Image 1 (cartoon, rainbow, N blue to C red):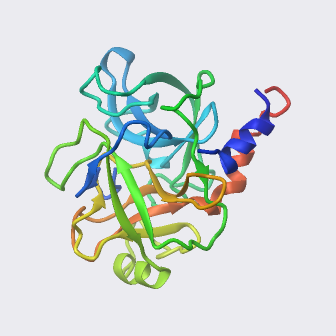
Image 2 (image 1 turned 135 degrees about the vertical axis):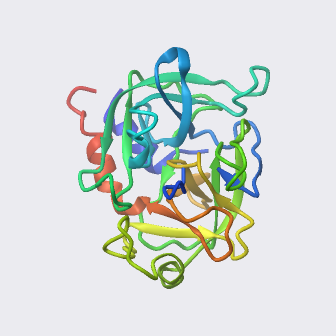
Length: 275
């Protein structure tokens, strides 16, 4: 596969455990609606355990949160399931495909004990075959975000003490400006955020009353918005961390994708000579 095709896929595809790993206040997603969604699995093949999410960005690379790369309890990320809708069903309108993750590439500035540069690329063992259930997502490339609303997607917890969801859920939430993000989530220094708010790297999103939110199990999944250009949807962020999910005035924090476009291209398209 030629890298020029991959490049087109990235930009122009038609169509808190403290680290917050689901969707609080979400509704069920329709089949083929979120074609980029990926489940990230751990442990050996016979005992797969799904613990994070991600998004397909090229035929061989999945974008996720760096803290999903090698969680202490679960071990290294080993599996990627694409085209899934309901984990508990084999008779729903879905076309799940499992791929092995053969390489985990966190951002070079990511430090395990901190929440900065929380982004990773997972390389799959072979190219994904695209269809109406499995397609890559477009990535937002500009610092400025014009839209006020975005959608968070995942199979995670439906509340702080609730279980995870077998069915893919989604919730529309607001994107907060940098001032509000800093005030609500970075009013004090913590060991995980010793440098405080880093607006170039982070987006805050949620709703004031906390009724819609990401939660444990959603980590690595995309924050997406509708696009009026060449893409149907564009990924703005990656679910990264937050406080207790579903709390008022406590938005989730998402890795700002536009800040990492050059790095994503360098990794995902860097094999041009041998593709």
